[in-house]
Image 1 (cartoon, rainbow, N blue to C red):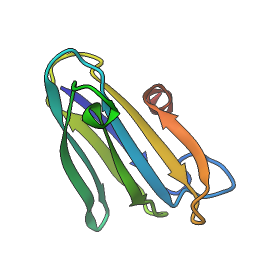
Image 2 (image 1 turned 135 degrees about the horizontal axis):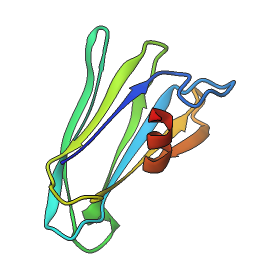
Image 3 (image 1 turned 60 degrees about the horizontal axis):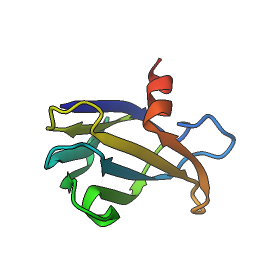
Length: 119
């Protein structure tokens, strides 16, 4: 099982441009059949969004990758959770693409960078 929890808010990247939207990409790179993945966020006023999907080890990028587009980010701190039910270590690659209110890409957070933020 893999679980990632990151605090999400508009100053996620600590730049002069606030993050208003994110895209979350989850790719499966394991050797097993695949895994179910939950991605959701909870704020002070309850659940903001929830996605449950399956990523597998099939051929082609569409079979082993899933992208959730245009998730809102506000000034309120919320928790973004990503959980899978696979017991195989290092079976997911996660990237978060951060966008300004005008839709310009500000930055990309990889799994390694998210771990650095947690430290």
